[in-house]
Amino acid sequence: MKKVFHLNTCDTCRKILAQFDLTGWELREIKKEPITKEELAEMYKKTKSYEALFSKKSTQIKLRGLEVKSLTEKDFKELILDHYTFLKRPVFLTDKEIFVGNDKNNVAALQEFFRGN
Image 1: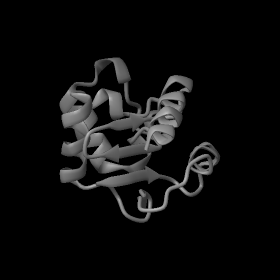
Image 2: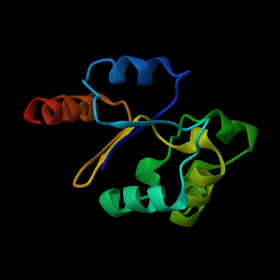
Image 3: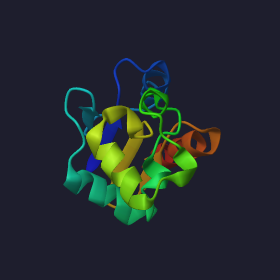
């Protein structure tokens, strides 16, 4: 399995995806084709945390009046399944590894992963 979950309208996602040869990868535009429960479960197996998959920059947080500090793992899971902007992105998912988000360390780990494969 090689999947990338991203948003076409996200400049950061586009910039990160452009760095790599994604031949053979399934590209999933999460606004058009939302993440499934099964896919989220697969991500959770690798991160052991729904919070790690949750975007704390989602515009929906303010719109819904959410207090992120008070959310539970169950809340994070339900919110990610409820609205695509709650998934931190991009997410690169393979059978063995997961790379979540756009922070510098994650992008560096991705670059290392693609150099080795």
